[in-house]
Length: 257
Image 1 (cartoon, rainbow, N blue to C red):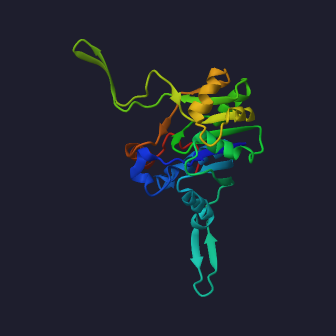
Image 2: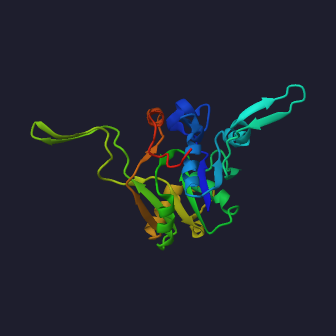
Image 3: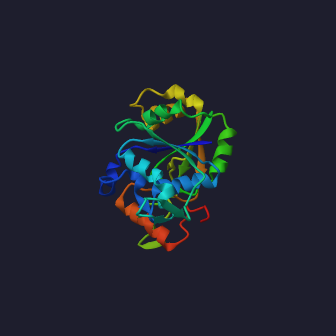
């Protein structure tokens, strides 16, 4: 099963980090968030990745080019330059790193990958959000409906705590709880090849140019995820995710070391 990761945006809302690196390379617990997302897919045995590159894409290429060598201990013979790698950290993934243009829109990036992917169905997500979505159940759900795309809907954690009142008394205090109403696009989609009917060149926007039109045509299904989901749009959210990782057992870590 092919997995498309959109990793080419400018990440302007996280400029403190993205001035020097692409957003998917911002680290959680010493690893790029892109790695965390890929580990989730790999846990469900989805290991053929197509990464749509754009802004500072060379940094993502360098990361994977050096992944094997830098994942273990090195012994270097300075006389002849021979290098021995002990305990290399390897993943049984195949990673396709495709330049899709600096200013190409999200739907346009997908279009540039389309003819290179062999399958009739593929998965897609953004490079800036972690979750514990049951991706196997998501794929099964998609196979059992007639939609061209199935989108995972999530209810995000509120930015601030919420209060319920009875007169001058607070009857319920909830610190930054999950939003009780309202679903949003959490990414983590499954798509069929027929989605290509909605492509319209490099300026095509995935959300407005494809998903909105699919919904209007009755071809967009929803998979509701009540579990953990967190995007990484601000420095505050970077810090939050790192705190969760350091505390141990972060909710999106469904794989075993």
